[in-house]
Length: 325
Image 1 (cartoon, one colour):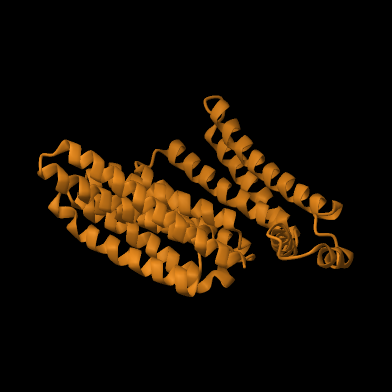
Image 2 (image 1 turned 90 degrees about the vertical axis):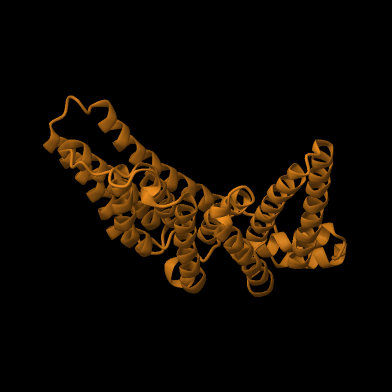
């Protein structure tokens, strides 16, 4: 259905641009409606309701424990949490593997797995750091996400994984801040982790996703470019971040070439240009600041931002028109 909707959207866009006359539009309309019919809206509403129901049910389980925590015995807590996980597993077992109910139930399994781990950690006070909880949660989520092939499950996996990394570098009880690493090394680890995830989904997205999309790749690129971009901007002010500036430039060139020539992806190209502008602006501020010319710095930085942003917009707009044509 999504392919047909995209095709209809393209036809309507051509009509708005004047590329199709009234006679051609009449012929296309006779072959099939260009607007979503009642069946399309029904399918959409079913998907939204099922997904919302699973998410609300999972949230209800979590809030139920939060409200009744003190009054419940630990075995009752554990039994209820495992029961919720079992219900979602049973739903996935009886549902069709290609249905939205199947993917929604496995998303519920991903959420319920985290609640079970949190319950065990709070009840038995294992002494583990927060990052360990999120890291184990992310690992246990992989089978559910793989079976579902759902971008929502993989997106949750990405979020939990990023939280685990940030918590590890922020509050490890063994090594302190940044887990004993320098700041630039911590950013580099985050960038490398997201680079691995990006490569996996670019190479095996047909196996990892039931309906191939770009959401997970864009999330990984966002974290990758943000980590390297922040380090690249800081490199103009601290020499220890210089490796990140080099890595940022190298990755930006690779992104621009790959996502322009091999696999066109405008959001990733936009993120790449944004962080290139941020890094260059940071360098321009440093260079003009050393000249002790505040007026020159304000005007030079302002002019650079206007020109570079305008050029980036023009290039991306031209790519978008080429993609639409």
